[in-house]
Image (cartoon, rainbow, N blue to C red; front, top):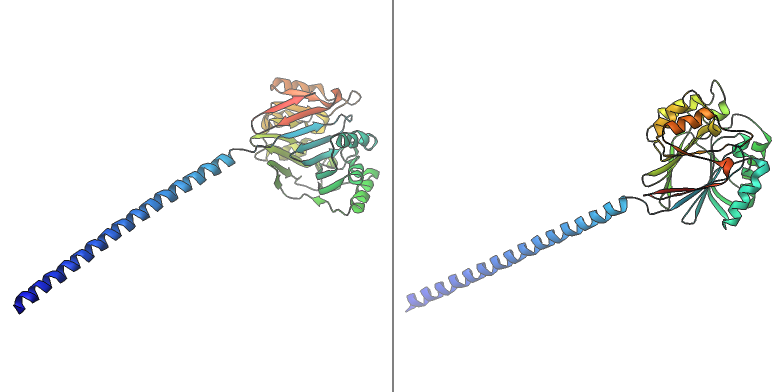
Amino acid sequence: MKLFKRTYLSYLLSLLMLMTAAMGCGRQASDNTDVSEQTEMTEEAEAAGTEESASVSLGSDATLTITAIKEGAADAFVLMWDGYVAIIDTGLENKADKLVDFLTQQGVNRVDYLIISHFDKDHVGGADHILGEFEVGEVYSTYRSKDSDDIASYMSALEAAGLTEKVVKEVTAFEEGGVSFTIYPPRFNEYAEKTSNNSSLAVRVSVGENAMLFAGDAEAERIKELLATEGLESVILKVPHHGRLAANTEALIKYVSPKYAVVTSSSSEPEDQEVVDILNANGVSTYFTKDGNITITMTASEVEIDQ
């Protein structure tokens, strides 16, 4: 009898151990299933996140409007997008009212970025009016290779506005509201000829894959530097130096490979016909500020130009 009880108890104990082990295996299998499901969900979430990131990175949804103001043989460009305003060069002092009036008509009270490509009077002349009439955020410029009344007025207006210009000495890039700016400075403080023109900043403004390159008044030596600079291909080129011919103008046009060009010239100070011929030969549609304001609308997918 004692032997039977001992045997029976041993049997019950063994059965209990088997049941416990089975339950443990069930829990482990269940736990493993949960981990597998969690891993799958995580991978799906990561994939969804990757798809979302890829979608975002496809391009900006900004709409940039660039207006080239008719100011004679002078540069004055207003860039507007999503409540932001930038100005690249400010034209002549005696025609600054055209630039100020345009901004006022557009309801502008703040200029977020003011970029002075160089300090010739037809690029910096209206800067003191902009600084005096509007709130200005950041100011970018090149070095000053000379003195003039226009420069003195600009410096006084900067001081009155409590601003300090940023003299660009190395490639500088920034992005605002889906529009990207890259500023390329001159490589030297002196040039064999025309240091002021050759000190021009080049500015590339892009929305997605579309871009416009502003080449200031670059002449042969500065153009040579641009030809050695990567990433300047642009759908629109602001032709340097009001459309005047340099030895390597054609090389620059081919290098930038634009579909459109803007020339800031006038009837009294016209562009060189040789430059127009080069543009035509390369299939570039060219617009001239002497014919009136030029309005460019640029998105990541298209470019429209009205005049």
